[in-house]
Length: 583
Ligand code: ARG
Figure (cartoon, rainbow, N blue to C red):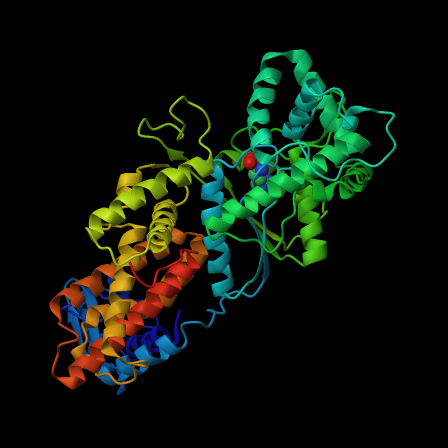
């Protein structure tokens, strides 16, 4: 809660106390602007206890408000609400202070927090699921940092499992003569990869289809995975190549989406830790043998449905997805000093994370205080309500999806701009790309993350409604006014000239940011910034800022416009959506 709201709450609480009610008090924005700036509903719950109507309680509170400089007028209304307006002076001071402090973190939590998001698999092309994880994860990381945490983002590549075994064994089938497959070879392997990322992308679906259809091929892929994990030289050399081409591709694609990581680690970075960890867990008596495999029982008495044990090691000696995740948790605590880890992963992996988190705590391989959170997300669906696919039913690649939206954005920009020929081809390209990315990211963030949503580029790219382009457009409009004013700084204002609702909404920013943090829900900020843009546009359409002759009014309006730009840019920065200077 910010200082202003805290001061107001304390004041109202004193009034409650003076009236004889020693109770918790909550102050919030007033639902009806005409009735007040803020309201308090705390009297409603007290009727029984004090054998008085809530309205009477509210009236008593109002009568007992101490002398102060913050509240201008206060009233009790049916059925027991307390509404009040603050003084212009208090509001002005608060407005100025909040604008100045916009960049400062909230300071509500200062832990070392690792955010695990993105999670691409090196053997497969990025698909729409990686859009969601990357987009939501980047926003959550930034929101956590704004809350005050020391955040570390880790992409956590899927680079140590079966898909790699599949690709490697498929390569072996296609090119048995390659030196990488010669077990007797002891020399140095070539430095340049024998394939491009495109080849790998084509290879995986073929290999995976074959392995699923043919038991023998699946066995071969599994064996290749184990051999890779155990360090077969030629396989490792190929794996290094796959890693190199794939990482470069992921960096590039995530770069376009304004998504970046402090750490570019993956499952494979636990390869040295896994055997030791397994040994420790076995020695401590937490692992059971189960049909030749090693498992950790994680079911608890209070569970209302069965929970399968976590697989620590497969029958063939292979390391599982869960084991690498467990080892990664240990590593993050030891090496990074992590106090909290947040996973932004498809909600269908819920079970996996429940198993891993429980195993981590039960075996005592991490401290009890380490907080582990699974922030799942739903799927992006096609119009048929099923996960969004290509026309022929294949997995939708992220690159193709982005191209589709850029195409749509281009049409929309041209439609909106008409024959505006001021822009060079390059500028046009830059604008439509930014519009497209804002459209895609905002659409992805604005629905509460656990929900599924439907991919609709036409709607996402619209300049009207709750969309990224609408927000970008609002900012460029505001900026163009500031530019036209010819001023560089905006200092003087009188609050009485400003639409009060807009000012109060700006002041609600920190509370909204805190809510987004508590719920790990960027959608809270999307709702907020959309509301802000609507209020600003109403103001913009009703006031002729540049031609206003009353200087006091004009400078107040410019001050407000500048503040709106700053607040909106701050929100969009937390959402990792890039804005434009002009459109
Ligand atoms: N690579 C995984 C996938 O595509 C996601 C990784 C999520 N993070 C993790 N620590 N398991 O399904």
